[in-house]
Each structure stands twice: as structure tokens, then as C-alpha cells.
Amino acid sequence: MNRIDHRKELDTIIDGLTRRPRLLLHSCCAPCSSYCLVYLLPYFDITCFYCNPNITDTDEYEKRASELERLVAALNAEYRDSVPGFSSINVIIGEHEPDVFLNEVKRQSLEACPEGGSRCEMCFSMRLKKTYEEAAAGGFDYFTTTLTISPLKDAQLINRIGYDIASGGGVMWLPSDFKKKDGYKQSIELSKKYGLYRQNYCGCEYSKP
Image (cartoon, rainbow, N blue to C red; front, side, top):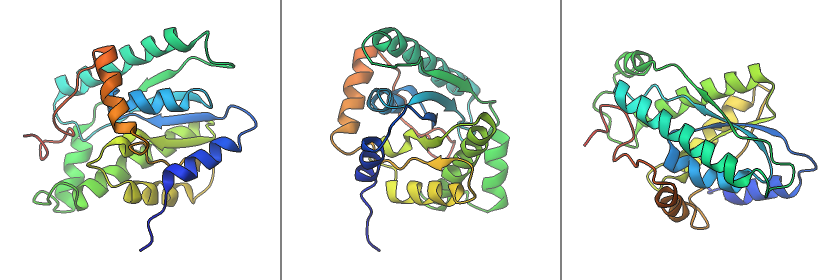
């Protein structure tokens, strides 16, 4: 199967923009969101959608949500007067629904799947479907996710899922591979700059070290 350069796709879309579209960005955490937001904010009016039922621990869910809100507040203050046409980044915090994720894992008998396998694919689909629904309800032009910043996540798979979900119409999928062009490295540097909490696992009980 030919691999698609989704970062090139993203840059081509950005180069063709004639206005600032509204983008709903699925945000898994503040560190992953940092570079994605800095890269996208000159071109889009962004709302972060924190929707991660895979995070089973309530304290962990709330801590990551709080860090995302803190990062967004810092970026709004920093870029408000320096980016032409900049509109403050907004944040939507989704309900913590770990049972939704865990029940689906059990329904599909995915408990024993290795990291990066079918359970992760199900998880990506679950979160992106919810993001699409939120974007459609809110009248957004595009939806996408921060997940492609991670070297441990399959950007080809994530983009394929995004395109499939968007095929129903209503909201366009914004392709990405944010780890490219040193995106992941820059996310680490931005995490240090803003003093962000960097978790050591994705979020579900199966990925916990």
C-alpha cells in the first residue's frame, strides 16, 4: 500500500486558504496539542475538543483537561496581538465516560490486543466519530486530531479513519502528520517552555506501565 504524505496534504490545504476556517481539534492532552496549536493558529479559528473516554482514571482525566486549559490560556495571551486575524482558541471539555470505552473493548473482545493493534484502532475511531459529531453540530468547517504528533501512533491509519468518517459529508477532515518536520521534537520543547505535565501512557488501563 502506498503511503500518503499527509503533512504535505495539510500544507497544500493551508496554502489554498482564502479565509480562516473554523477547526475542531480533537486534543488528547496538552503536550500533544502544543505544537499542533502553534502550527495551526495562524490559519484557523480553533476550538480544542478534549474527548478521551480511553482515560480510565478520573484524576488523570481531569489533570490532563486542566493542563490543556492552562496551555490554551497561555497561547491566547501570547499570540493575541501577534497573529493577524487571530481569534482566541476555545476549549470544550467532554464528559468523562470511561465505561463507554471499556464496554466497547469487552464487546469486541479486545482486552488482550497489543498496543497499536485493533483496540487502538477502535479507540481512534470512537474519539474521531465523537469529534465529527461535535463539529457537525457546531457548524465547523474542519475536524482533525492531535494524535498524529506521536511517533507511537500510525498516522496513515488515523487519517484513513478521519477520511472515512468525513465521507458522510457536513464537515471536512483536515489531514495531518504533525510529527513530521520535527513536530514531535518541538512539542517536547513547548512542553518544557510552558511547564506541561507529560504523562507516560496513553490513558487506558491496558497501556498503563
